[in-house]
Image (cartoon, rainbow, N blue to C red; front, side, top):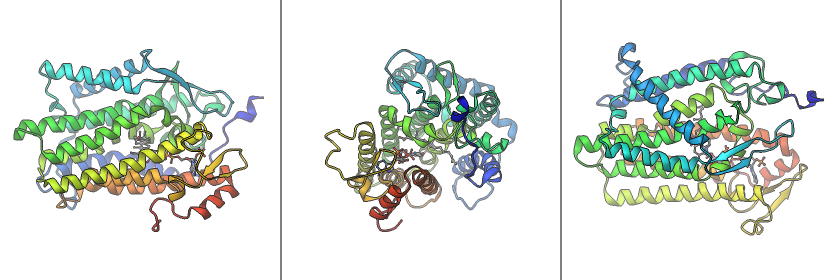
Length: 420
Ligand SMILES: NC(=O)C1=CN([C@@H]2O[C@H](COP(=O)(O)OP(=O)(O)OC[C@H]3O[C@@H](n4cnc5c(N)ncnc54)[C@H](OP(=O)(O)O)[C@@H]3O)[C@@H](O)[C@H]2O)C=CC1
Ligand SMILES: CC(C)=CCC[C@@H](C)[C@H]1CC=C2C3=C(CC[C@@]21C)[C@@]1(C)CC[C@H](O)C(C)(C)[C@@H]1CC3
């Protein structure tokens, strides 16, 4: 009976299969250290390769590791508090639905109070800057440790609970992609927890620490630092406010919880996404007011596209008869669901990615035009989203067949109008 619910073997391997996965398992951590070590040099030139390496023994600090555990522990405790509503995720392979507590925004509020109280009591947030490499190394160890535990746990999971994207039978590939779809300890959902809380809030905290460090060094925060902090904080707050929307993303629905997401959530987001703020501490930039206004408008444009495109689709998927979307044109599919072909989703096939990429550029521009390093996020994110778009299209073609082909005919561009 349960056999028909078994997760099928993953046949089409992504990221170059086991070899690609193996390379990424080494490349992702190496990239973080390359970025941070280069950023600390005076020239911050990407051509100075390899950057000066500190002795490995200086990276390990029990103190920072415990601090990181305390941070994750605080977020876990806040996740478990009975505040906020409980909602259901999408229907799973065995026709069940998991329950999720929506309280990330509350968690952010409490975290802000805790940090505020700490600052009032004399806490030096610039500790994060001073021990940044050690913290990144601790996050790396935590990510490897958790990924191994998750893979081990997945070997005992029922076959209905495995991830459609990480069930190839190859241990390296499945370790990277995640073998189990929604690993839980009781009602504690590890993927859902890690996706939004310790990493995203950690990123905002790291940025704030960079601002504090800059203030300690130069007496006041620069305009460039204020812009980077404000833009990225808006992005984090937006993600937490719209927490429920994450339940329909590819990461929650399709990908397992393996090294890619564990490392992405716990190390990559807080330590690579905060590169612009880290850069500004060591390489102050003068930003004229007109430039700042231009960048502000660019970020506003990106955010409006990102938010309204995501909201339009979420509203339509939740209730196609919602008055906010009833005026939009749609095409039917054999699954009974319809596809939007006007509004943002009639402009390009991934308008939300377009908005996200415009914001990415606005986050790097405050760092000036003299260095390539702070533009790492723009390059990386373009590659990530082009690859992600291709993965999503592949799945949509499988799901919707001819209707998807018709959608592609009517909306020919993927992300960039008239370009791609
Ligand atoms: N900052 C970061 O590091 C990252 C940010 N992101 C952001 O996360 C957000 C979510 O992205 P992601 O999870 O990739 O996917 P999307 O939110 O783009 O969702 C894709 C899904 O939307 C549905 N869909 C596609 N076209 C249509 C249409 N015309 N009408 C109705 N439904 C449609 C399909 O699912 P179905 O039909 O089943 O509903 C498709 O699988 C984006 O804004 C992205 O920019 C993503 C990755 C990394
Ligand atoms: C190969 C490689 C570098 C993998 C790591 C990718 C991860 C860093 C990202 C995969 C999808 C993500 C999402 C967000 C953060 C980055 C990762 C984990 C996200 C939480 C950022 C905030 C957004 O508003 C979001 C909630 C839509 C988003 C979801 C996807």
